[in-house]
Image (tube, rainbow, N blue to C red; front, side, top):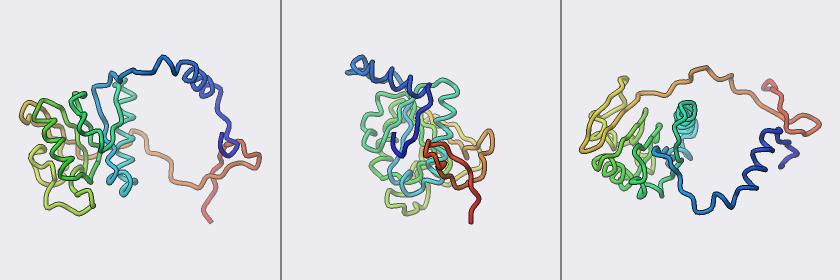
Length: 189
């Protein structure tokens, strides 16, 4: 492991199992009905909000045992494989991406969008209204949850993602002198 980090016994067991069964996973296909988009422009240039919302949504799916695939911008032409697309605060999307999402919904797909999804272009320029305003039924972030039928599909807008338990405050972490990968909190200078 890098930097002398040691894996826990359960992690070691998982990795051994994966390596010993790799051939069984060849030519398989995901059974997930839900796709969670990680848009490059959103995740890379607004990680403090887009990543947090996406991880919180993914955690909700995990806790509810809902299988999902993580997809990226280049996978938007494969949305027909899914029943639902999740845009958890994916604020920066191109017009082409919006067109693919719009077509997916109108053809019967479900869309769950949160917070500032589609408010910016892929260049992070603010649009005068949501890029998906026609699907949401309103132009700007709303404090209310909304549900709509659009074409053959359905859309849900959630105004925010919240922690169920507040995370600890940010702190610097350093490896211990024995370099075993364990961390300890340190106070800022």
